[in-house]
Length: 89
Image (cartoon, rainbow, N blue to C red; front, side):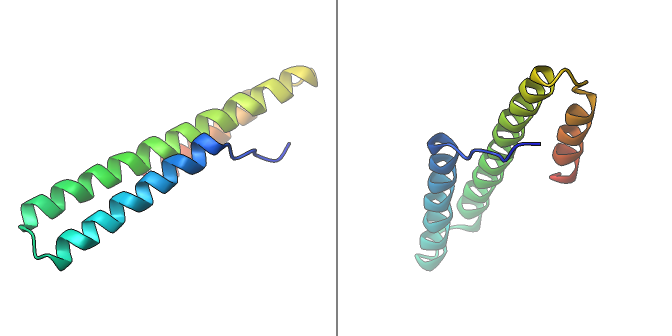
C-alpha cells in the first residue's frame, strides 16, 4: 500500500479548524454566553468530521486506483476505509 499524500487542500482544512478553535478560546476568554460557545464547538466538530471524511475518501480513492493498477481486488481497501470512518465516530 502506498503512502498517503496529504494535499494542500487537506492541510488548509485543518488550518481553518485551528482558527475556529482559537476563536472558541477567544470567546471563552471574553466570557461569551455558553450557548454561543457550544454552537461554535459544534461547528468545529462538524468540520472535523468533514475533514476526516475527506481524508478517508481521498485515501480510499488512491487505494482503489493502486489495487486496480496491480490487478488486485479493492475490497480490503474499502473495508479499511469503512473501519476508519466507524472508529472516528
